[in-house]
Length: 244
Image (cartoon, rainbow, N blue to C red; front, side, top):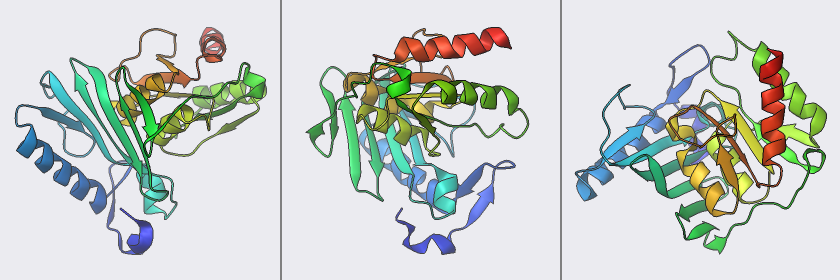
């Protein structure tokens, strides 16, 4: 996955701005073969070869071979691989690997979260004005940008700053590491957030849907934070929804 040979990548379009490379497919095939050999009764929900609506077993691996494919295809070293094992829909173990920085974020439910083996902890920011936030835009942003940009502006007015990296899983890992204080995004897939959500939780953070309700990787949306600013973030989103 290193970027040394990025100019030799074969890149295809899945949509107007949604890209896939041969690395996405090859890494997913390797992962599927590994799971099939070791856990033949488990299923896999992954970005490139899963079928919409496919029935999943009680034990399901949720996997994104390259989260941040657009960055990767352009030679921008902000991308990762992410995997979680969900049991009855709840992530129990998770890993996110950033090969550019050789950073491995891991978590086990009830046991904690780690970066290269060292314990992770979320930040201590108490207010939005003291917070560095991060978000992302879905592949539908060209057709319906107004609501997304309005919400981005709402946070921009209230936070210290807002970033957009292009990899939801790294956004979540960075919340867990205290590099960001909060993250929100809409229109996500399970493989975009399952692993990162568990890592945030185990680092002492909070994850919910955008209304403040229980998080599920199947809901397509997430707010993740250090916990201290969480209600403030949810209130900003609720206020925008009332305006629309």
